[in-house]
Image (tube, rainbow, N blue to C red; front, side):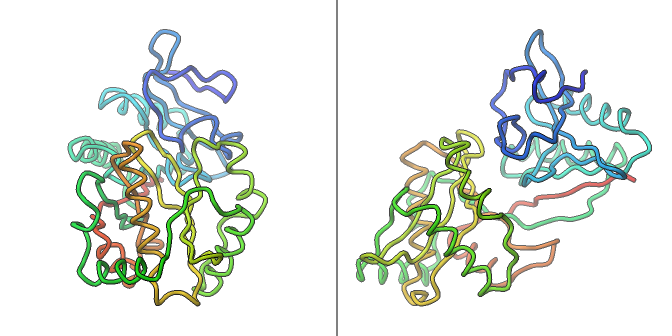
Length: 294
């Protein structure tokens, strides 16, 4: 076991999640607990040490052990406890759908047995992209999709500027009373820093942009639905439903097995309207937990 920085981190023998990798834009502050395999990493866990807390999952949607199996997870979490003894420890794991049900349960039980407790449990929603999209939908969403198609609403990939997309995101979040979670400069840098990870999806009616979302390639088999926004003038055409349909079909074309719709809660508190929409769009629930040990 070793504690590496960005420059000394071993190349992994596994495919890491984007949010644990040293190339992630916020990773300049991280260090990694590493389980070595020769000159490579068999598993790792990013950590950030602050004054009173050490976090895995800092300025990223999640952290925690990545790669390996139960043996390596035990090594990583035990080393986390030993290395930062006396500090408050926090681990935010990915949604359980990112692992098999057995692996997700093993990870949960491991953290509980090592003295962690769940501080926040978010409700995350995802779809597996194996079935025809319409087969997943509530009848009301099928009708909305048909209406949008009749009006000529079209789905597009990387056909709107990131500047215009950001303006729509800001307008939408202000309308809904949500905070702006990313500064303009940081948002505009995403396709420059990691064009293979960030794709801009949109729906259009002639020259008007009705809705946008960023697709984040979390791993080769997972696409995360990030920062969605719609124009309130066109809500009658349900542009968000058509946007999700387009991204689902994109996932099928790219052999991406999971489209992650994201959470329907904030701090564990449900947004009932958002949860209902995610369910109507075929979303299946899986928990996304943050653990603490004091």
